[in-house]
Amino acid sequence: MYIRTSREQLLSDDRSFSLRQVAQRAEIEPAYLSKIERGVFAPPSEEVIVKLAEILGEDKDVLLAMAGKLSSDLQHIIFKRPKLFAELLRQLQEVPDHAVLRVVREVKDGQW
Amino acid sequence: MIELTENKLIIRRPDIHQHAVCEVDFQRTLRIPDDNQSYPLPPGLGRFPLEHVEDHADRLPSQWRKHGGVLLPMYQAEALWVNFNLPKHPDAIVDSYPFALKIATGKVNAVSGKLWSEIPESDPQDYVVLPSQQWLDGYCVQKGLIRQFVSMPLGSEFTAEEQITGEAVYGGIQIIAYPMKREWYEKLEQEAKQSRIDSDDFCVEFMAEAQCVGLGLAAGGLMRQEIYEDEYGIDAWDTTNPSRCFVHILNSEQWKSSTGKSMPTTPLSASDYTDAGLPWFEVDSGDTPNLEGSEILRELDSVATKEIKFGKKVLAENKPLKPSNVFLCTSNRVIDGAW
Image (cartoon, rainbow over all chains, first blue to last red; front, side, top):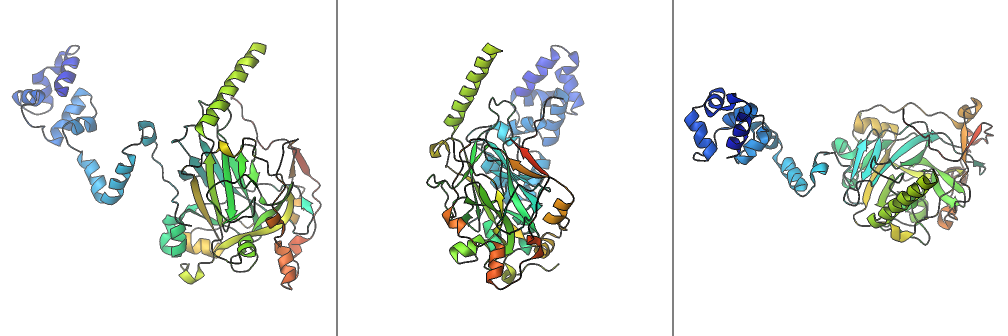
């Protein structure tokens, strides 16, 4: 639904955002795009979502997250050091946005 | 939380207030003569380098890894002072968010001489208050007098830790910071806002476990410096989850072998500095009340006294000096304007 709303908003100003033309630029069938937009099909592959995000000017990570996916570059970062990033993400869970934007390295305090 | 940036420890407490930020760095300075004369303030000769302990964990003793914190290299021929700065937040009305800081060496409090505790004490006051305290050069031994922080090997019986506790266990410097309580700060902001309105109205080898002895700090020469009384009172400070840091002091060999980095340049002697006509400093703090000094710390033997007790010759560096070029300042701050 989100993709459809976004595309139709763009279409109101620019006819190149018709279902057919967007599908063509994303290299998928118009019928398939229509079904994705209506939520009839399960979310498409990461590659298609990234292409749609680029065409519609949306954030690819947001679109991927809405589809319940995580981009492969982020997966790679996490898989490289899973324990560290799992700990970091859990710690950041409750942190407000402005604080998350400024992630810094802390001087470690120990037992003394 | 504490972050390390440009050899400064930056203590941030956004959980209490976005403006609650305090910076601490360690300035290299001259080792003043330890001759029982009192000297003016020596200059700051740049920040000591600092490194995260865990970046060099595989080359450090396990006890140091357990302490965490940072590493600081120091020559015995130099001294150290602790520099405090409270940066002004762009949205703040008042100039700075006040903090109370406890500074200890070898877990002996440098203001009260008492053993380390995690909470601030007001009787006697065992902490310094920022922004009124801009620096701390040594142990508060008497009203208006401190004994300079100088480094000595732990285990040599010179350090304040060994003289007071009889043991050489920790060495280094320990810091704990308490920001002002949010509601107290907001009151200060309210007052500042009001006063603004009012004024408007008017107009090599790795360090093995056995070599785990780092450096501790001992009492050096006497210097004229006031440690100010807490103008806000003990209730002003938020003691929940205070920020702590252990600063391990390394000699040149330990620094090179554990970090692989070279030492800063060798320090100037106080006599070379004075002979060159370079400035010393004296601060006029007016009528600001200051602490009496600790009776415990007053009993410390300075390094020169200890050397005499050990039957050693007094070092040439302790020859008395007469600094002639002494600048009197009312504040250490250079005010930057809009340009």
